[in-house]
Structure formats: C-alpha cells, structure tokens
Length: 183
Image 1 (cartoon, one colour):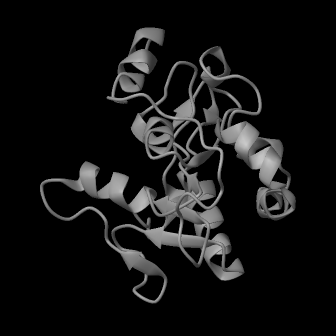
Image 2: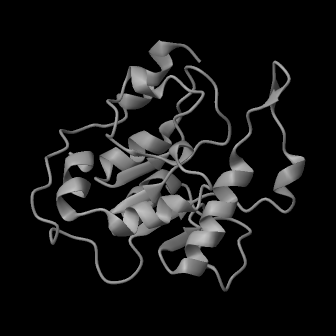
C-alpha cells in the first residue's frame, strides 16, 4: 500500500480524540488488554515471503495473545479460539466493526498487530485502537509506521526479545508513562 492508504485508514477516525487525563475515566475490572484475531490452527504454515524473508507475523500475534491470556492480562476475542480462552467471537453480525469498537472501549490497551509487515502497510487495527482510546501494542519493525507515528506513541512489540517481555514492560509502566504514550 502507498503512503496515501495509511492516511485513508486514519480518516476512519470520525471525531477528535480527546486527551485522557484521568486513568479512572473508564476500563472496568479485570484484564487490561484486548486482543481480537482469528485463531489459526497451524500458524507456522502461514508464510508470506517477500525477498526471501517471511513477513507474516500472525503466528507471533497468536502466541502473544495465548501467553497474555495465561498471564491473566489479555482478554481474547476471535473466531476459532478455544471457548475456555475467548470472551466471544467478535466477528458475528453485520456490524462487526462497531462491535469491535464497543469491545475496545472497555480496555486500556489493545494488542493490534497486523498479519504481515511491509513498508507502507497499515490496516485499520492501530487506528481502531486510537479511536477507542486504547494504547496500541503494535509491531513497527519492517514497516513505515514511524513515518506517521512518533516514537513511543504506542508499544512496539518488535522492541522486545523474547516478545513476551512486552508484558513485563506493561506491568512496570507508570500511570504517567501510560498517559504520555496514549495521548
């Protein structure tokens, strides 16, 4: 996708997003992170090869979702996830996008990684998190996302090795650090 397409998804935000100043403004009890994605039966079989490199990150996203669920910090939404793990399917009905935004309004953070990485490719995922005033947890490495977003305006999963360290980072984040990134 071209740079113009990134902006097209950004136009999906149909109102000003007000800065958050009070951490008690919403987000009920329970897990702080929402993750919405279809469960892949054999995620390692999905490969998108570009210039000899696998740019498919759906398997990483799925592992992060499952490990976050086991840690007690991620609520999983999506088709085919084991019933014991998922809150709900989240893709039923004609208004799945509206349902997604209602789901996100209950959370502080949104694990919203793409399926693949490529320069210029950015779907609705990060924009929906912003629209719902969730701090995005996104994969920036190998993309052009920093052409549109300043450093530290989201949590970049690609900065962590192993990837699950992102949950330690989130647990240690102060309220001030959270609000600075969110706003």
